[in-house]
Length: 158
Ligand code: HEM
Image 1 (cartoon, protein in one colour):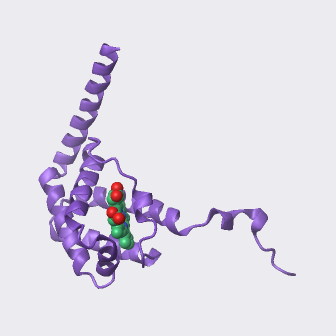
Image 2 (image 1 turned 30 degrees about the vertical axis):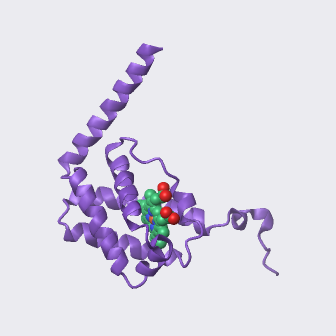
């Protein structure tokens, strides 16, 4: 039992060390993630379409949101389990959120990475990760599986 626990902890430490080394090779460390999150969300707040939607939900709670987003990205990048939240639930009921806003979110994230002079590898990794998560959030928020059910499809009249 004890050996099993020690073995699993060692395995997790190895996974994190490998992820940290891969990220370091792309120029990504915890300080980079902190700067990315701070820069990106200050641009979100200044954005004409994204700003009001975020602020409607996060007014007075921005510092906690930034801390959470730093933990989220550190956890995805370094596989260190720093974040344990539920992103899909968090986005339900955000007033004014639309599918098109996700496109604007991704464009702003990309521009932030360019302006921060992230390496091409780092930009590629952050964008691929963000696009994957954005796609699953959009599916969870805007698609009704019943619409894909052939039994419910309206037959075209002939
Ligand atoms: C138009 C696009 C988006 C909008 C308007 C939006 C808005 C928000 C808001 C308002 C919150 C705070 C919820 C709360 O604490 O009450 C939040 C949390 C969060 N968002 Fe987004 N978001 C967007 C896209 C994304 C994308 C693309 C990602 C991932 C790459 C993401 C990841 C997260 C995470 C991890 C949280 C924290 C969830 C938790 O509470 O554990 N969001 N988002």
